[in-house]
Amino acid sequence: MSERAVVLFSGGLDSTTLLYSLRAEGFEVLPLVVNYGQKHVQEMRSASRIAEALSVPLTRALLNAALQPIFAGAESSQVGSRVEVPKGHYESESMKLTIVPNRNMLLIAVAGAFAVSRKANVVAYAAHAGDHAIYPDCRQEFVESCARTLHIATDVELLAPFAGISKTEIVRRGAKLQVPFEFTYSCYEGGLAHCGLCGTCFERREAFRDAGVPDPTEYAPIALKEI
Amino acid sequence: MSERAVVLFSGGLDSTTLLYSLRAEGFEVLPLVVNYGQKHVQEMRSASRIAEALSVPLTRALLNAALQPIFAGAESSQVGSRVEVPKGHYESESMKLTIVPNRNMLLIAVAGAFAVSRKANVVAYAAHAGDHAIYPDCRQEFVESCARTLHIATDVELLAPFAGISKTEIVRRGAKLQVPFEFTYSCYEGGLAHCGLCGTCFERREAFRDAGVPDPTEYAPIALKEI
Image 1 (cartoon, each protein chain N blue to C red):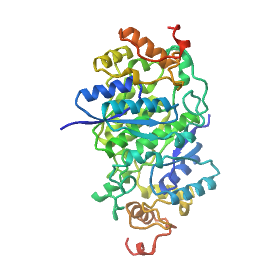
Image 2 (image 1 turned 90 degrees about the vertical axis):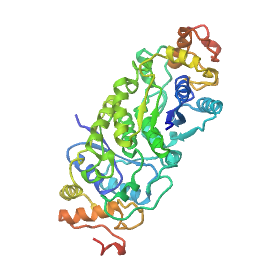
Image 3 (image 1 turned 180 degrees about the horizontal axis):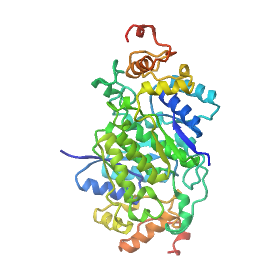
Image 4 (image 1 turned 135 degrees about the horizontal axis):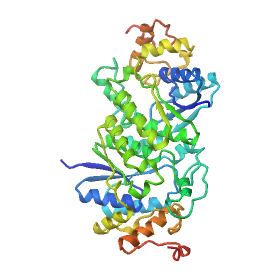
């Protein structure tokens, strides 16, 4: 029997590589974009291009407006009262401002509901080792507990195959799978070009450099000299 | 320090008693109504009345429209393709049609995000022993696993103080706390009066009868002779 996987998908480098990777393993993939309030125009454009490149149907759940009362009191650069996006390396304390309260449990719960509705037996998300310092809901302990919770409720299996590897390794795997990295988008600022200076841009640039893979990303000119 | 609890609240008998009960224990309560697609006009009216009676602010997250693509394929009387609401006792096989895919994980995840945003240290929901036969996400095993997952992600504690007791016992407790049962609403049909014949109406009528507490509910005339 062919397996069917709902893939939490943002159009970013990690979840795109996850999508390609599961597909290469033989899964029927159902990419799911959940908007919870992040700046999303560029992400949506990327997600659509990638789904088109793979000829897979893309499902969108636009929860942003409905979640406004939920995040209204949050201090985050991504939702709620919108503090400024911090610049610099992911491991710095200031990156905690990018935390979206209970983000991954929420995304996985929505993906789990979608999986049951569409008779998929797997939900997958692209947490990776580089996220651990800042985001508790990317750590192995969370993955295991959340997998158990989801399984009790729905019989659906949760996979986070990148939870033990670095973004550099994701870039290497993506290159082998011929992931169209130039279509992916991950900047926290949400501009047309990647800012090159926020946590996720920093990490992206380092990952390409360390993997020895050419970086096709278009960065805003100011960023180019900074790494 | 006073404790602050987000209470998943539907305006029904169970969650209203939970709200009164936590308040009596000294919690500052933040009732949260999440609409995920259920028939909700009467529930919302009830929830508003009860919050007003308690003088507590009510928060609503109206996710129903945004979740339509998620539940589109689901076979449920409550969301998605909308099969007919089954009549009769909760323990019958047909009641599985009332399952909303991954409902409680989704509600708890949203409540967890709200708790962090509002600096609450507790999320509470009103799963009870009578739900166990049909709903895996009301069982103790789920409560414990979900509590652990939420705590890893957010440090928020999950409480389900009714998970080990029957609805009859909830009615007894509610009566002691002077819960205005006449304001509560739980019918799956969503009509002005309770239908008296769906799983939740059946259970409600039995609970009042077995608790020896007068039932102030207005049932549709056809129901009155059936119990």
